Length: 396
Ligand code: PLP
Ligand code: TYF
Image (cartoon, rainbow, N blue to C red; front, side):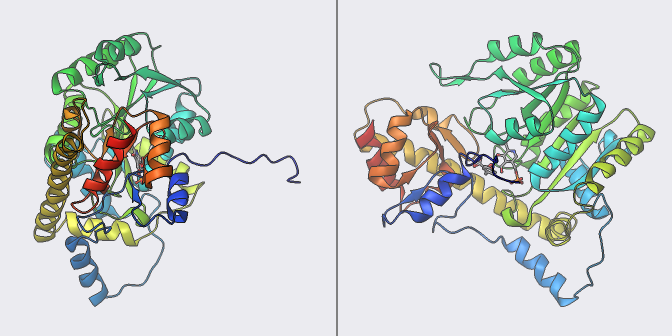
């Protein structure tokens, strides 16, 4: 039965983890996968999460099935976070939100629903993008192409190119947009550029799918979410996937969501019924624990304040590491201007290093980033930063 099965390629990012774990270099540093580590190099367990879990454990509950679309209080909290608690889309009831198995699950539910709705639509992802975007939409049955995004020469976004790609797209094309903290480049577009993207999307009749995997890691929770308000104000109907993997440091709990902004409440209830079919035929209903924790934190003012503080600390520490990286590279003798690293935002930096240089970093120094030159600056800390700077200085 399986004799003709071919070996599938490894995930380019998760595969690096395996290589890292097997590396015996005592100085090794993992800047490959997008995970936030604290200054001691530890994966944080947030205080707000611990507090919520303590309360939950003091009154243990039985584990029945959740509704297909998840915990009601969770879905409402996601809506409020993404659109604003008192926003018109939320108060009018025209957002359909489901709990999902991570941000990836949110993307996949949206993709499967869209495939039924627009079977012939093409999907455009940014060039480059999170590698799983292409794989996920391809596996959902779509033809996936790219829109222009990164400009290596300029070290930034080729915005004219991006607009040109969108303007050349056929009506109904699904456009996957990084809401903030672009993965892998670290370059976001400005609010004014978002206005132009929205105008193009509207004029061409494209379907926006916003991937919000890093809300709170850019400029703040509300600041990063502001782009959603722009799409609402433009009168568009669109998709938003949410991930709490990074913002709650709950990677393995798989907590995410999908929200679909519809024309009115009645339309939202029809859309929700279809999202539920997608879920039911895939995994029936979501797991409880992670969603219950996030709902408990978001819906309790004290825990929510704790979360905002802790998320703020992660954001600030990443920014400090960017500056330390720029200063450290200079001190280590790197002649070229590396200050572009502080103009990037979120967990990643496109370093501009070549594949050969990234391979040398890995093999000679145990410093792991992706072959494309992406480094996770959220894994730098005051103990490994000098070593990483010395290693980079030796390969450039
Ligand atoms: N989208 C982007 C851009 C990401 O970087 C990630 C990272 O994991 C995801 C989606 C998936 O999030 P999750 O781990 O919650 O599935
Ligand atoms: O880009 C990253 O590193 C994160 C984590 O298949 C990740 O988004 C990487 C690959 C993957 C799933 C998650």
